[in-house]
Length: 212
Image 1 (cartoon, rainbow, N blue to C red):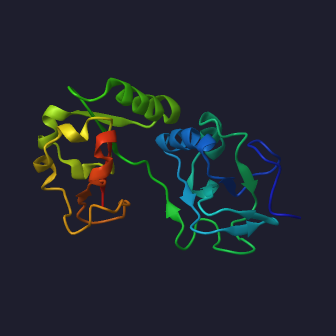
Image 2 (cartoon, rainbow, N blue to C red):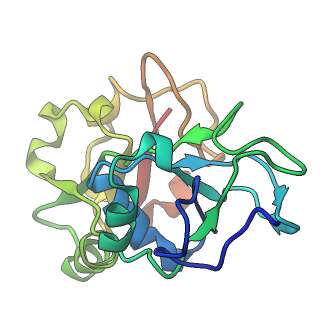
C-alpha cells in the first residue's frame, strides 16, 4: 500500500496527519487553522512520500498534536486542499514534523494609520490582511508611534506616505544601524529583537520595518 490516501478530509481510516502544499490559495485557511489553535509544521526541504515529491515549505498538520484535527481543518476551509498521510516516515528528506521542521506561528502585525497615510493604500492593506487572510493586526496611529514598543511586533506595515511622515528618531531605539540600508532584511529569531528599515529609495512608496 502507498502512504497517501485520496485528497481531502473524511476519507476512510484515521490518517496520521495532513499535508498542505504552500500557495496563496491556502494562506487564508492556514491563518484560520492557526487562529483556532491548530499546530502546523513547515518542512525545510523537499521530500518524497508515497511516490510524490513535495516542495520545500510543505505544511504538515499532525493528528497527534492537534485535538479535533478534522474539525479544525474543515472549519478553516482546508478540507478539500489537504492530502491525508498514513505515516510520517518519508522516502527521501526529513520525516514529517521532525528535525529542523519549523513550527508555524501567526506573526504579530501592526499597521500605521492616521493623518497623512494614504487611505487607498491603507484600505488595500486592510482588505488583504483582514478580509483575504483573516489575520489579526493592530492599527497604530502615527501620532503615537514614538511611544509604542515596536519590539512586540514581528511585522510593521507602512502604507503609502506613512514612512516619510515618521521622524526617524522614533525608531532610534529599535534600529540596528550595523546593517547597510541597501539591503532588505529578513525576520530571524532573536532574544533581543531590533528593527531595521527598508532602503531609502523605496520609502516614497511605503514599505515595512521588520524585526530582526
